[in-house]
Image 1 (cartoon, rainbow, N blue to C red):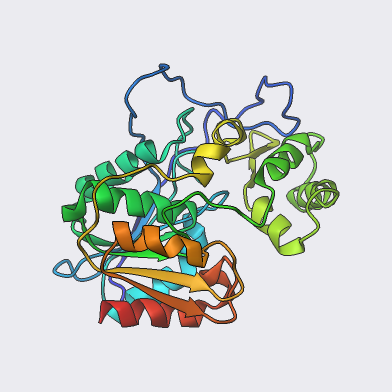
Image 2: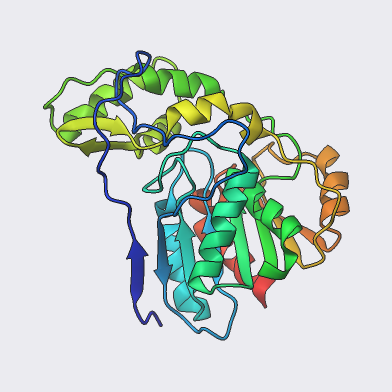
Length: 304
């Protein structure tokens, strides 16, 4: 039973017009950073559902263009069904978390590590989808004592070959032109019409449009399109690691997805020797959205 909900949210100050000429719908400006500096963590936005402190918390990490709200329903279901604390997190440059010019997995792993230590949620169960799965894998490899077990959702520790053309998506988002003062319903419709010339899939457009937010009377993209576009190759890759993670790991795959291929299995076994692989038959890449009940059942089975 849920005993309460705590949340932290970054205010939307600073989301005014961006001077970048390529962005018609403005994006929130990046924080400054020093070239060549060590990754500097940012304070991530999160939502924590309370539960039993004696059991490892479940920590959900979203994928590219996503946010902590992607896991809202499954997080509540798992909190109710397991009695555990459940944390959902916005990655840097996503959702309500701050913007930064650094979009490396090393930086995202450090953000997550600092947050988990701050909240006293270690060791925990890390559950990461796509980009979030790579962040979870990296933290498990770097600091295995912080991760009781790992679930990587439709992703592997190798370079990703996505079915979607993310650079073209980012270019289409940058090109969206919405006049000031239009109501939200009209703004979303205008943005959808303009995106549809490049992105034919309605579900993908609706997913991207969750990032269109209103601030100071204007509509802006809450994702940091500049940083994502500059580092998309890093996001598709995975940092080489010499060590392995000794804990239990589940690679939960979508049966209709091609993100994890048989050729990836050797890398998975090398880095995660205790890995199990499970497929959700009728799910695509967004397993938790396509088959939420099967997703929850698979997680509960792995925790048992």
